[in-house]
Length: 207
Ligand code: ADP
Ligand code: PRP
Ligand code: MG
Image (cartoon, rainbow, N blue to C red; front, side, top):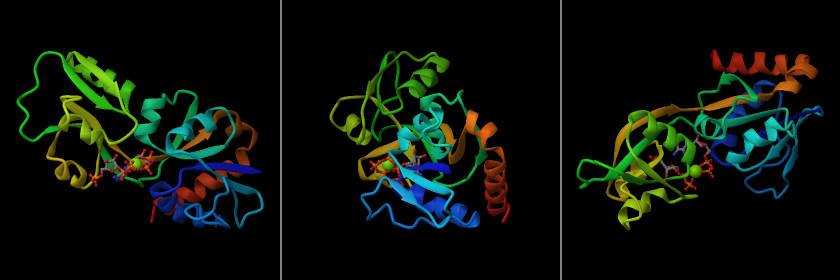
């Protein structure tokens, strides 16, 4: 049995063509099903539906053999204990700093609200900027509006969320896309099945 960890929403939806290429069709829709283990059209493959930020944890511990996770999540988690063989080029966005559109240039010690604490710490440290990082779990865009932070580190795609909140993007930290990750032991123990899956996913990417 191969277990693949995915989050519902945009990653699941964009992963469907990759799964289909390998003959994997989920037998239930995670958007409506309450099941967390989804059987698929392949008797030897099941999906586990988890929070996006939990995907590297499940794969690292071998609770899932494979997973699909955003580079933002992998960077924040630290992915030394995982293989990351494929960039699936889905769920593309940018990890950026953003500030209020009328904000003065940031100087001295700044306060940064983000859910990407380690990534932000590393980013500002590399720049030599003194930053106090405030961990949030969502709605980062609110922080500069209510005086919680001078700056946020968050994902930007269309920029609509920033604009709707009178914020503007500043600096690009990293271009983001989702990656296939593989448990290191599974890569050895289930090599034949996983290599075949990788080959099929690569075929989708090459089209
Ligand atoms: P969450 O509930 O953790 O926010 P999402 O499905 O929104 O889950 O995000 C999963 C992944 O999709 C993120 O880790 C990121 O890589 C990517 N992503 C998030 N927001 C966007 C977006 N607006 N456009 C494109 N990709 C995104
Ligand atoms: C994500 C991200 C930003 C927004 C950026 O939120 O956290 O808020 O998308 O996209 P945009 O530039 O196209 O507006 P998401 O839609 O995932 O909502 P969430 O708060 O539930 O994560
Ligand atoms: Mg989201």
